[in-house]
Length: 319
Image 1 (cartoon, rainbow, N blue to C red):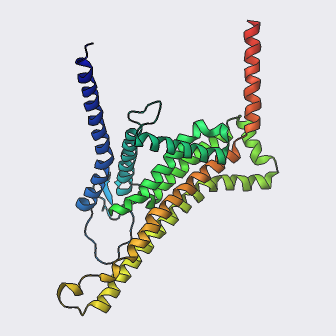
Image 2 (cartoon, rainbow, N blue to C red; image 1 turned 135 degrees about the horizontal axis):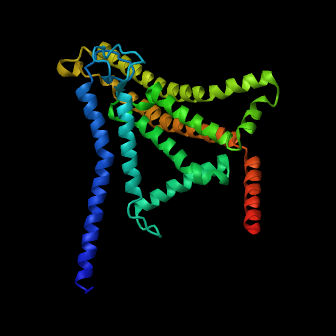
Image 3 (spheres, one colour; image 1 turned 30 degrees about the vertical axis):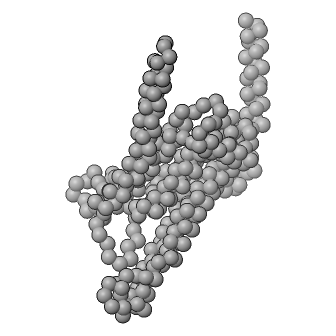
């Protein structure tokens, strides 16, 4: 390869790198723009205080009233669509941060990616132990990112998936399946023994507590996020009414502008949308790690794993 061909190849590679970066940025931004567009185009206008669940975009029953569909009807709701849009945006962000990784960090994005990995691995290590870092760090990071970004959707004026019980219940059921799988990793006999070792009465309570785990996780996350949205709507509506009552005498357009709404709703949004959303994501992830780490029979697992390796070694030496 000649000296003139090397810069041309580097220029083509640099151009290809920039094109991929632009596509990844579009992958992050376009889902959010789509969510806002769907909200504007498909949501009917509202007057006064409006506190309701996700709008139904489509229902399998063509004769059903979309405002009165029942839970047994298959439907596509605003919460489901926004959840998928958030997942696409997070995927684009992850690909953007990991695009062009090198052995030594030389870019801001690689420093950010390494910082996220270090913090999540440290969180898993402190909560579950170093044994669980490799399989659980990506899972915990995905839970936190999905919950935080879903709650931040409210800043765009669209419905937040974390305000829908069906979405949060799906997360809780998935976590419950992971908890059960790790509790039963040493066989069904040991798993059943954890319920029945203290007698039949305690066994019934243990089963109830096991079933209550996903229910409590779902209601805790949903209740905290939804209550913040309700409080924000009520405070904004009250300030609008109070502004009209106290400042409605101002001439012209000034009397129609809700001046008292300036400031306080923004402060509440910082708390409920930013701080509370991040806090609930952290709590949900912590509960996941605590339940899995507390129910995983580590000593029995290590004992069985070491015994299996020893038997495999004996078989290999005999052969």
